[in-house]
Image (tube, rainbow, N blue to C red):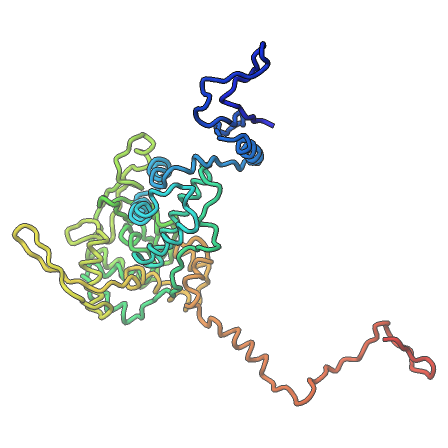
Length: 457
């Protein structure tokens, strides 16, 4: 088997005259025994021959199985591994990269960054998790945990770790948010919020409830996406903004383009909106707002023009952050969904402006309209498969996980069946026996005769 141990303090061949091995120039300096000659494994030195022999045997076995990991490769600090090896190899779109980078650089690197990869064990993860849960909600902590696990899994594949400590799951587990049910609005709430918006933005509520797009998908809808003859709307893109505030178009979440049925009355509202507020042509890069560095990137990021159905009063595309603060939350407050909790004073030069501050409620942001759409469809009896396709979910299981409580009669069919089971009161004493003729294990019995009785059963 490949691999051998070299004594660095003595020459390989003995002296011809004395028959003994002479000392080398390294005598007394550094570690004496070096393991060499294992394919794909760097040499390693040891103080004693026993340590060298033990390491050689273990490494030969692991190398043969393809499981060898040099512990020296795991000595790299987590920050160095992320910044020099893992992050540069990522190719996420800005809408994914920006929040991921923020979470890693704010919640992983400051607390585990100086720790060597091989030293990130269950104890380190328990301490980090406890600290993390004091800073962020459990749902956010779960996402950050997944990011760390992804980094460490890459380190395993790069041959820097034997296993991913995040997957041990014995003494430390990923943060788990409390289970919550998707919230849907009653029709009165929808109408109240809609009435609180500017007229040009009310169609956003209609589309959210009537077709179930995400906010970015609604803001990215173009006039050409509506096929009024076929009675459908095509969800083909979303309008996103990167961390530097640059807008761009990209595919819907998960790349799931889809076609959603458009009710006749919703179609009429869209047509009326288009007459009152003509679409605005908007040209933006595709997938990434960064200037292309290669011909391939130039083709991939080639700008497209969309005649946006939703636009600002100045004729611009909608910035979701500004829209949420200045249009959506005031409408929620006017409808009694949110409360005004204070006022913020901002000074710019000589001008001082006051801004209302509303309580935060993620459950009542634009996405609640999507939940309302799903609940309406399911309560009307539409199949989980159809609703899943219209929502652009990865699978019907995802839809069922989020919206099972909206399925009409959920649990009632089983309850009715069980109730029927106990419909009749059992008779007193022994349970009634079914009126079925007894059968012998040996087949039909002959007529009973004296002296012909069986025994032994």
